[in-house]
Every structure is written in C-alpha cells, then in structure tokens.
Length: 398
Image (cartoon, rainbow, N blue to C red; front, side, top):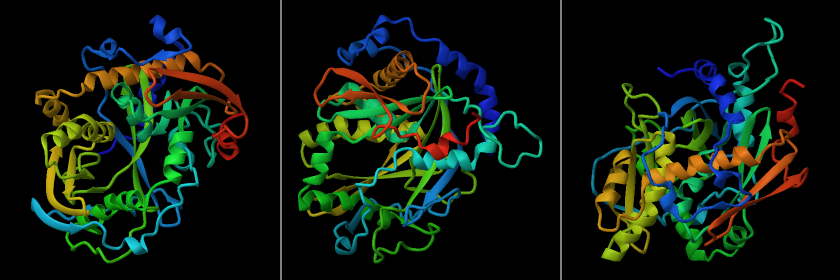
C-alpha cells in the first residue's frame, strides 16, 4: 500500500525547514567555486538515503498531453530467453520522434503537483475550499530524476558537462537542466548512424513489452518516443528532502508487488567482445545504469546486448542493488557508489548555501564544463532564464 503525500510531507516538514536554514560548516561549500577533484574527499560510508516511496505517477500520450494516471505503463513480456534475435533497425523509417527543440523543463512535474495540490496544502483557508492555494511544498528539492543522475556521476564523468538552473521558490529549490552549447551542437550535428542508434533503445522496449505482459509484443506499429509513463517519488538524502520524477520503461504483471518494486529498466549495449569492452562497460555504462535505477528504487535492469548492425543477440538481467558490488569485485574497480552519493549530498549543501534569493524570477545557473574540475555559477533574472511559469506561481498563496 502506498503512503500518501500527506503522510510523508507532515513527517518531513519540520526537518525540511530546518535543513533549508542550516548549511554545512564545511568551508568548501561556502566558496563560490565547487571543486570536484580530488574525489577522495567523498570517500567514506554511504550516506543516509531513504528508500524512495512512490507518491504518484503520470502518463504522457503521443501528443505530450499529461494524464495523472498509469495509462501509458507497459508490462514486461518475459520469456526468460537469454539468446534472442531482435532487429532494432526494424521500423526506423516510420519512427515518430519527439521534437527535441521543445524544452518542457519542469512543466510536467509542476502540472502533476498542481493536479495533486490538495496533498501539499496543510491548511486550507476554508473547509469548503475546493481549489486551495499552496503555501509551501514542505520539500527541499524538486527535479527530474535524470538531473540527480548526472550530479551523482560527476566525480567519474569527464567527457560530458552539464548546466543546472536552480530557483528557490517558497522554500523549495527547483532544479532544471539547461542544454549546454556543446550538447546542442552535438545534437544538431548527429550523423545518420547516431540517429539510428538513438532509435534502437526505444525499439528494444517495444520488443520487450506489451499491454498486459501476456500478449506478444506488437513490433510492427511505429515507435513513438513522445509516449511515456513517469513515477513520482519522495525520498531523503541526509538532510535533503526530495521529490523527483523519472520515466519507467515497464513493470512486471505481479499483483503481489507494489511500485517501485515491480518496475523494470530496459537498456541496450554493444556486445562485450573484448576485455576493453568490459572495462568500459563497468566504468561508464554500469555507473549510469545503477544511478538511474537506484534513485527511483527500480530493482531490476534488463540489458539487451547487440551487434554493430543493431541485432540484439543476448539478454541479461542485473540486480540494481548488486551493481556496486559487481564493479567493486572487478579488476577495474572503476567507481564507488558512496562517492557518488556523498558528492550529490555535498552539491545539494552547496546549492542551499549559495542560492539565497527566494524569488521565482531569479535563476542560479550552475555550470560544470566538460573535463573541468570545477562547478561555477552565475545569477540571472527574468527571461530567457526563468523556468518557473506564472501559471504555477499563481497557485501559491500570495
């Protein structure tokens, strides 16, 4: 049985407010520049991280219209076969691709919040108020799961940079990723081969899922990557209370399991032909696979291993919570889960210390350049940087 937002927000409101007013005494947090290296500073025991509790969900249809239900949740069609032959190139010519130039920012999470806002209202002005306004979310951070994934992986990621916009509004820090100039140029100049490979992951999902998990998948209908099912979870990392949402690929059709225990993440990867392939898989792919699924509480990852022509020949299961041990026991020992989570905790402390103006029109831009050892920030006001929309602001008590 799911715990309601009411249960959790009441429990966390007092500690959330205390956390937002008290910051770490670590002098590194007080500096304008955050130093990423040496990562040995983030060694130590794994920080307190509460098991994510699903507090809601929503679906995005083919037209990117939001529905506060699970209509787009797919079910795993599980044959338990390890040797398969899935052509990921099939149907590419009729691929219905989402427009990547349209940046939705946090709009869909905010729409979900407003759709569920009675859960966030601790005291309505009137008992018969059917549309009460919100005073506070009683939560420190709101973001997409993917934003925290990138932050967690930062100590071990040198090739790709990121930019996160942060706005403090009514005591909550909203984090929204900004597409960097480098990433935009890379996206705009993708080769045909790169575009095809971007399709392969969505096609693998189609091979592995169906409407109920009992019927065979229909792989002849066009893939539409605008469609999505998203879980919304509440959790806590040390003193930081967090609400974030992430897309879920599918679930197992087992009534005994409740979200997120029934969720499955589907991934593709090139077949590990040589020792170097395995080293890179442990160092880069498993890190991101683990971080992404761990944050949402997804217990199982199914990987489809393909050849260079896009044919999946092997399917393998991974227990999300065992992945750090797999890496630790390997010769590479490429990354440490404690470092990832301690760095994320440190970054959130840094954000709380630097972001002090509670104003939806003020945006702090945190920038980590590719290969850089630093995270820096600038302060912007108004358009084009503001990402908390007026229709959201208006639903809070003036």
